[in-house]
Length: 490
Image 1 (cartoon, one colour):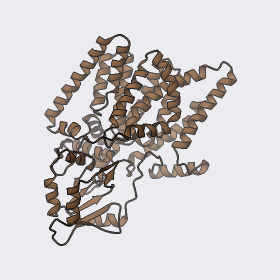
Image 2 (cartoon, one colour):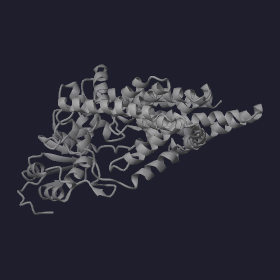
Image 3 (cartoon, helix red, strand yellow):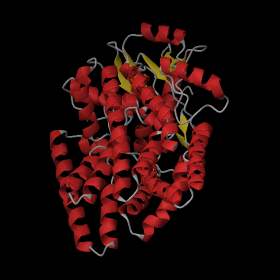
Image 4 (tube, helix red, strand yellow):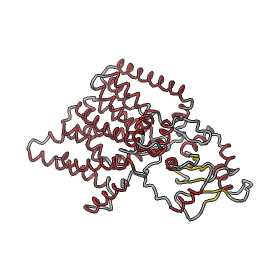
């Protein structure tokens, strides 16, 4: 009953993902950066430059997702936007793969077909997946590799599992919950030697892969490890965990029941939930993290929830009681969708009509999504008149099909590096003081989660040599002052 009721909603979600492959709108700044990095592979350039020098473009993504997107981009246009569309297609396939492995892993731990299928449905219909189930990011593909590794391990294909866990690491470099879950499972099962052997083989494969990539790309370590933020945000882990739980409370409520049962049996699903939770809590400490860091926890919870669904439906003995239990489960899931997956000011037929209209435009109502503000036509007109190097903090400009020279300033990365004296800003400040940059095109706020994105020297030098064009934006354009400056004006 619950599955039949959720099928139309699931179909709507999949259609929404597919339609938005070609959408020009972005719901997060990361996909444009990833698309540009993958596009460098398409045109034969290195995806891992020395971002300490102009044009300052960093890439802290390991290569697997970038290479897949560059290969798939052959069926799209040979442009950065075409690479973004290819990356979205890769992400959708990875999302479907994650749902499939949730079903398979739930079945491995004795969930019925219906309960396992419902667990996969619950994950697919999570509000968190409305944007991140299709948008080009590394997280979903890395999760797909991890769940593949867990399933292969559960089928006693240990070396295949190690290969899948290694692929997850080279998709997202902090993705280690899978191999950690296997090690914990073996240790709890009084097989410590097996745990040590599997972890050792995985570690050797990772070290060999990193060494090989560093030989191929001399700045690979700088980008993927040296370029990670050196600032930490103690409030972020619990804040984002709370958001994940609030908007997926039906999944986590069921998972709590399944976790108790799985812990008693020392099952792999319980081990994965614990290691994924630990991994995601630690990862979210890094400044610049976000709610999608908890996708592994959500997948682990969906597997456990499937086991709990079986308990819920097996407990009643009477047919009427089973129907009531199924009805309660269906209503709980729909209630979750109602309060989290739709705009709270829209109801009934009005919501359905507006949602279909959103699909036709490729827009996205989900609260997790960053609703990109509509760009001011006058600002775009002025932007198109500019000639020369344009410095921007908005990666969307990288997707524009023109020949402008873009200097992308990733302040989320450069600011922590500058604070730790790992980034020499003198060449950049010199270019600003000499007004060699035609314009600064700014989209974001200059402060994020208690840290200034612009350091004082940069702010003073820009204020002394550039001024904002008033009355237009976003994007907000700063152009050089006409008169020479002595560099002291604030």
